[in-house]
Image 1: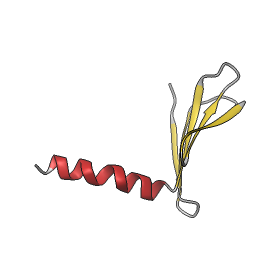
Image 2 (image 1 turned 90 degrees about the vertical axis):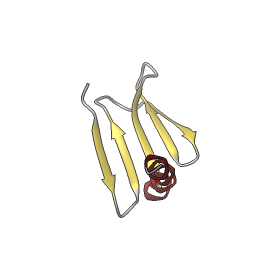
Image 3 (image 1 turned 180 degrees about the horizontal axis):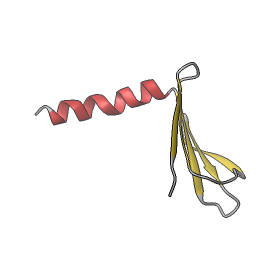
Image 4 (image 1 turned 60 degrees about the horizontal axis):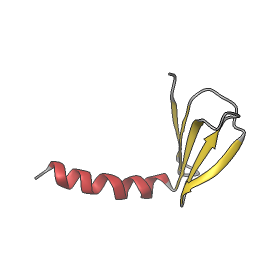
Length: 67
C-alpha cells in the first residue's frame, strides 16, 4: 500500500494519504479530519495545527523513553 505523507509548514497541516478519490470527509477528533472513499474506506488523514498536536504526543513519549 502506497502512503504519502506531507506537511505544510505555512498552514501547519500534516496530511497522510493513500491513492483514492475522496467522497466524504468527517471529523474524527477536533482538528483531525478523516477522508473516505466511495466504499467508506479511509484514504486520508488531515491533522490541523499539527506541530502543537505532535508536541503534545511526543513530549510524554520522550519522557517515558528517558526513564
